[in-house]
Length: 54
Image 1: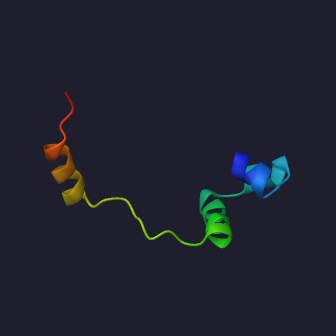
Image 2: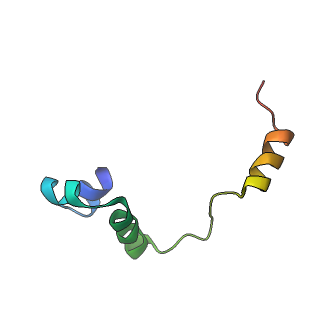
Image 3: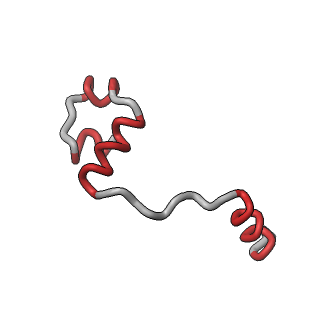
């Protein structure tokens, strides 16, 4: 909400009609695309083995 209302200055109605995909595209337009993506399942499994919850 802070991004949509505060940064993009969307009216409340516009904000609530905006899809997450549209908000994501707006963020990429302002800040650029990020190279870091969510880890793969294999990477996540390896991290969970290396750092198990106690």
